[in-house]
Image 1 (cartoon, rainbow, N blue to C red):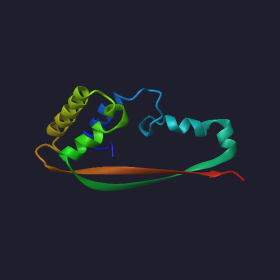
Image 2: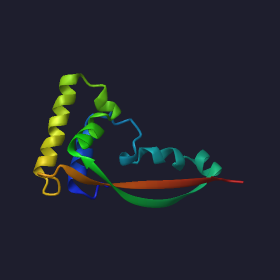
Image 3: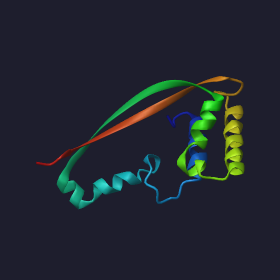
Length: 118
């Protein structure tokens, strides 16, 4: 849930390692395929739903979540360790996470349904 400042900072950090042409949710680029005339002839939609849930995680789990992202996981070990340090820096600086061993990590799940035209 990127409405949380510390999560927005972690997402920005993660995004620095992804090429711009990778169609990721946060960029909205994945929507472009559905904006094409041929897609609009085939599909109606989207209908959209948003679900929010909270997961309890240790600091280590948050670090692992970020460094296991494909663009970061393929980096050399020393660079991954640098990213892990940056994640910990964010966690240590945020009033929502500083000094806490268990973190409440809110997730937003967006569901988009496109229906085939008849």
